[in-house]
Image (cartoon, rainbow, N blue to C red; front, top):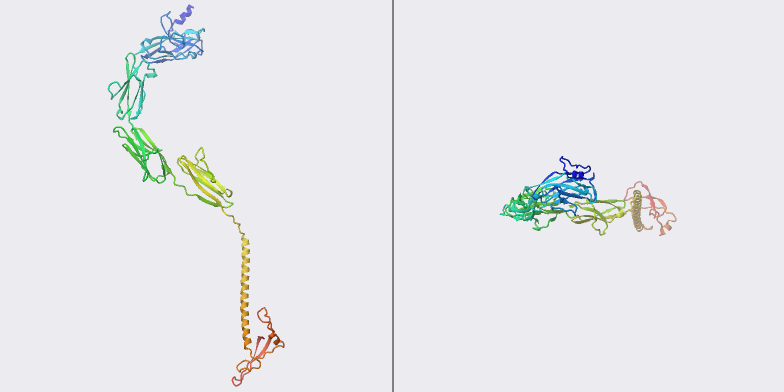
Length: 539
């Protein structure tokens, strides 16, 4: 038994991590230094009985004291143990073979050698003091500077908070802090690790210092240089040339062809000279200048002017900026249209839309009410085919975030006309021409016959009135006729119902007569009489 006790308490004088009993070892730094008032974490791992996984085990960090002196426990996870200090902490978990030790708010009296003890449980035989390997803690004077949070570029007129803390994220348990400022006499703020203030343009390039001290009065400092520059406000107004002025809306909606003036105003403290620029969505510089006011004019706007315009105030980098959204609306759509098609025809309707923001478009048949559809992505065009059985009113609907627009077209059907065959037209025309020709011919013949008949009637009437009687003495100068008549001539001549032949001449017998022309001897010399024959119709 005495031999075992000696093995436990005798330290190792060679550099290693393994104890003299097989299966028990520990890995930890031999010497650790920490500044007074600060903190330190000492990593530590161990094996017990060849294992580093346990359940409900206990670990203890103990100050090495004189032999036969009770354990001076400084840190443990055993809540029933008699821990002598408050700034030593067993932050490792013994169940995982972790014996890490953390010391906060280090003090001079914390110096000394320490070792680790492990107990699997109160009733277990696995209990071991790793006294062969000790860790010696050394506490030195405070020399490290505090850490101040980086404020970046401060904005004049806007509150900002600075934080001063010990190095390595140590808890400032026994440390004191105070603040000084280069343009402020004495202490600016004390007994606080944070400070909140409102910078101004005059604070630019001023120095702020944090002082950290421990209970022994040792002081360290950290200073930063303030970078303060920024307008307290920036505003954009706009005018429509010839119309409204000084509008403050951050969205401009105008029709094509209109003109707009956008005015950027900057308010600053002091006499700081600022550079102002106007840019578009592509970061193209459209206008720049110095001072606190800059205009940007857009003339004869088209849809290409649609987008976000930014006014920025610059020093060596962008300090502050404001945006305004310009939307240029397309010209009004043309009036409603109409088209007609034949029974055998079809029609293709295409609707294409340019919009900003991107638009979606669909075709709707009829006059029904339609809610704005929800589409997962924008579609800038739509095409449909319309046949003769689908004639109706068709509406192209286009919409985006700014609203809905509609264009209509009336599709109608032409009246049906039966085609006329070419050959029928030819026969009919020929027949009509023939009939017309015959009619005209007959009419001409009838007129001619009528005229001839009237002329014959007139001649007959004349001859009846001029015929001499048989007893009358013929004059000397008249011509004598000797006409031989048939026996029934007298009877037929008295018949008033004599008929005309088809040629318009009375149906009579044809007679030949001998006519002698003579004259009295006293008046006409004697000559050989001549005989002439003539065809005479006897009346």
